[in-house]
Length: 175
Image 1 (cartoon, rainbow, N blue to C red):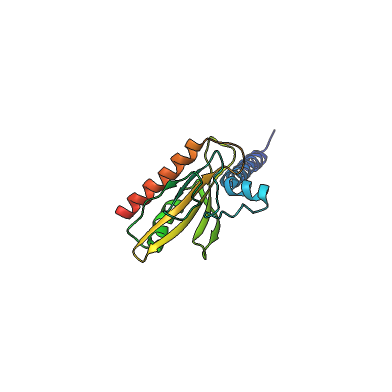
Image 2 (image 1 turned 90 degrees about the vertical axis):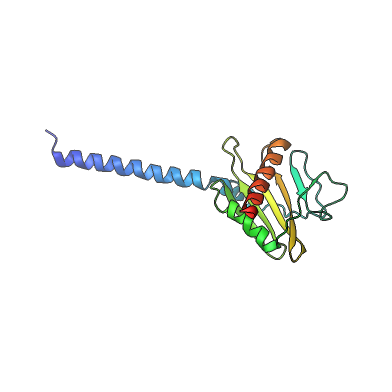
């Protein structure tokens, strides 16, 4: 006959294995978006220079007036009646609170930031580069470029992403 202590021991062992596998799965899923790109690129993505950037075919670019290459295909972003610092804080309040968005790189001297955003329906994360542009002490704008470094996607996906980010930014500044 099997003793009650042996049954308890088996149940405890199985429970600990299940919990352990759950923790491993959680770390795998939660770390996938930025680690996929870091792993494939050794932690490096191309640094975007908006003044010389010609967007890829399946990407979307919006720029502040006079801050991107004139013969490239891009749309103009709004001029916001706030300082560059306040504009960046408003956008970071969005990116910092979205579980699907991770900050990949920050260039504080250029006020340029690279983010990854993991879309559930896509295997690889998308990359969004944002640069905040001061126009005066009380006005600013931004350059924003969304693309897929790995895999493929459609321009509409990137356009919708940028429009979503800008909608949040505008509602944050209004509120």
